[in-house]
Length: 78
Image (cartoon, rainbow, N blue to C red; front, side, top):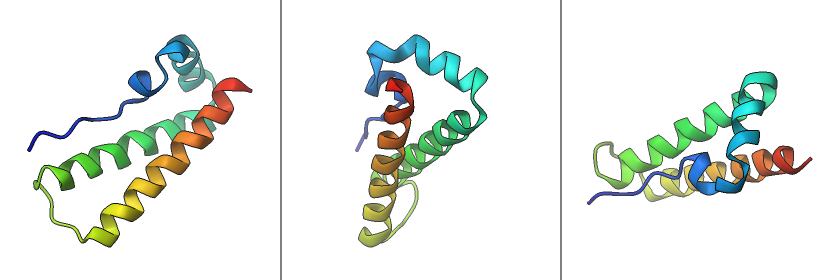
């Protein structure tokens, strides 16, 4: 099964330039973005059966990705 990644530039295409600028200028934003990307990659590995994880673990990771996405979006529009 090939699962789609959710990179931030695809999640927020209208904010591509702002994403790039904030990753370079805002260390907190850059940390959140890096964590988002790491969590997203881990979810994809689990869903592609490359890594084993319980349903609870997968659900927790998905909730974490959503929380990070919300935090990043709030900073993008601030």
